[in-house]
Amino acid sequence: MQNLQTAIEVLKHGGAIIYPLLALALAALVVMLDKVIVYRRYARLAEPLRGLVETYGFEWSELDRHLTVLGPRNYFGRFFKVIMDNRTKPAWWVESRAGDEAQQIEKALGRGMWVLDTVVTAAPLLGLLGTIFGMMQSFKLIGPDGLVNPGGVTAGVAEALIATAVGLLIALVALFAFNYLTRLQAQTLDEMERLGTRLLDHIRLDAQDGAGRETA
Image (cartoon, rainbow, N blue to C red; front, side, top):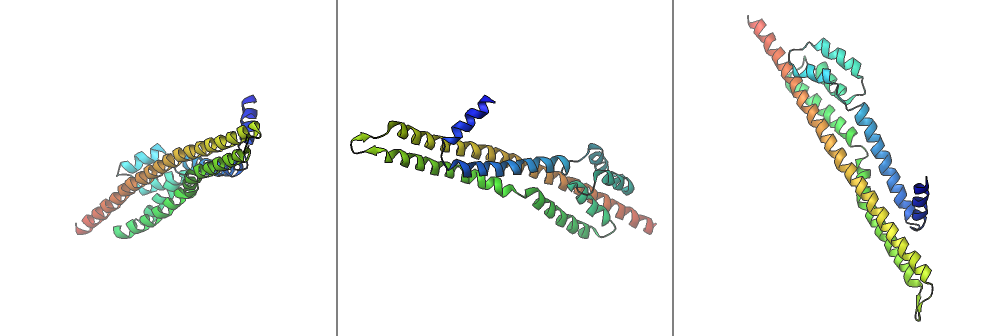
């Protein structure tokens, strides 16, 4: 509790620029929490379902049962459902519908990432602006005969340093979060594409089996 109060007191000495910096930090935090919820609830794939798709020889009714358990809001469920619902169509048709759905999912996963990208760029610049304001405040207290108010000069320098430090800290946290979430998004989409290829292979095998029975 004492550490929190100390941090608040330090921020108070950062000047007016601290408020937009805190707004950027809050925006980045909201996006990060939203992404944590999205990936934990809607972008996770149960191991039994992954194993089922990997086997190639599953029944479509069994896949439908797993997708029902997964729920309609799960991104993997949405993607697999599109492929399964169009499995009687030609393969090129299924690939087109699956590609469209994958694009929509990519947009959903990437929603809000621009906020983190903006924070990474804007926070250091705002911190630098706070540094300039603090130094200007210090220079105003220096008269022709020397220091008019040494304490005021110290406060101005402190304001400059605090604004810079806070801006850099916010930018670093947002940068790490942005890179991690970008990597996580790429891994999710790669996994989705890989398993989608398995389902398409299953559809092609079903088509070949059907054609072979008709020939026989």
